[in-house]
Image 1 (cartoon, rainbow, N blue to C red):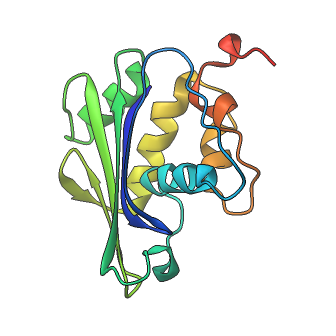
Image 2: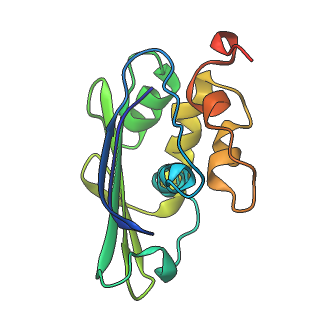
Length: 157
């Protein structure tokens, strides 16, 4: 489960920290309020493609961190153990994008290729709908945060 999302110098956002509680969290707001920015930032932590234009104007880099509770995701815990990136019941995914377009990924403080962020992102989402990781990480895909961030049997439409 996503526990916290921290965004720094991404798109139009200077600083943003969202703490998620257990249960469902709804991200709402007026058009242009930044709802999609938060979802796009999460997608970067899960391995989506980055661009220099994503860095906020005037900043040298964007920094996005997503902290996940892995209590109910044994697939993710196993993946971390197999890749020697274990950190017990939590996992911190971080993505740093430089204004020159270079990008670096981190899992629990260890530098990793973006492909490993993608693999772990799929493992973190293993107890949600199968299309969730691709919906958040693929450009041009309609965002469905409610369906992607909570188990499908808990969604009420």
